[in-house]
Amino acid sequence: MRWQVLAGIARVESDHAAGHLVGAGGDIDPIITGPRLDGSGAGGNTTAIRDTDGGRWDNDSEFDRAVGPFQFLPETFRAYGKDGNKDGQISPHNADDAAVAAAVYLCGDGRNLTDREQLRAAIHTYNLSWAYVDDVMSGIDRYDALGTAPAVPSGNIGAVIQAALTQQGIPYSWGGGGPEGPSTGICCSPGGQDGGTVVGFDCSGLTQYAFARAGIMLPRTAAAQAGSGRRIPASAGYGALRPGDLVFYGYSPTSDSTIHHVGIYLGDGKMINAPRPGKQVRIDPVTAMPDYAGGARLL
Image 1 (tube, rainbow, N blue to C red):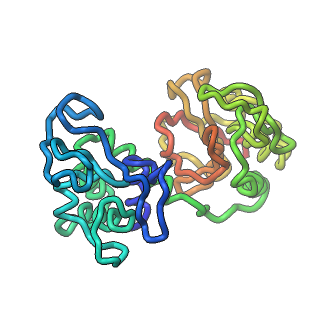
Image 2: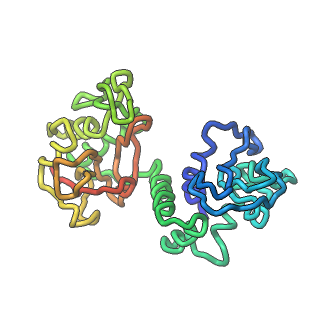
Image 3: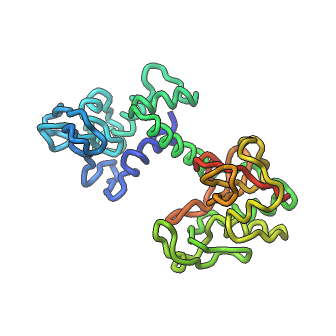
């Protein structure tokens, strides 16, 4: 068990208790409860689950609700709950207690969570949906990549990578950035971000800036950048990428016109990436996005 696994679960279940206060001792206020599991279809539930805790944790004495940042059913938490913060109380509404309970549940009877297939199987027992498993695993991969990067090569490839890495933490700005560095962007992203109010980079603005450090002027959009250098088809797999390559994502892996995102490959399955509005330039696994469309080698 490692923290990235628990973070992957908590991200999907409650977005890490977003919108709630987490006290120094781990108590969450207000408490987090899911939809009433009365079989009505709310929250995707179509099977009624009658109350098992007398309303103790979910404030509902007729039907159960999932509770806490890890969204345990009360009956499940009663079986696996632990006193994670050593205060003498066991509650699904305490982040420490809930995290330890999730660890115990996922580890099961001798599971080896360093084995990816066993980890996927463990997550599937948490929620019997392979789409859920894929979502959690995507988060785990992103947390695994946080703050770490392979060694930077020398020469122009190293100059490109180092330039991009120095921009970590710069905000995403829709239409922002370019060869000269971060800048305000334009309005508006599909999610509604007005880049004109944010100084930063979008994905192709970041790649323009990094490659300009090696004297290479890239086109402005990710789709246009796919026509630069030697194209690496998606069918060749991630293993065909080399540090300094552009990494593309598109709705159709064989049609450059559908490419909507680009990053710079760092090696070891990671890329430097300006992911989307509300986020910052960061290191991500190349698997962080589902629609890999190959790469391009300019150096």
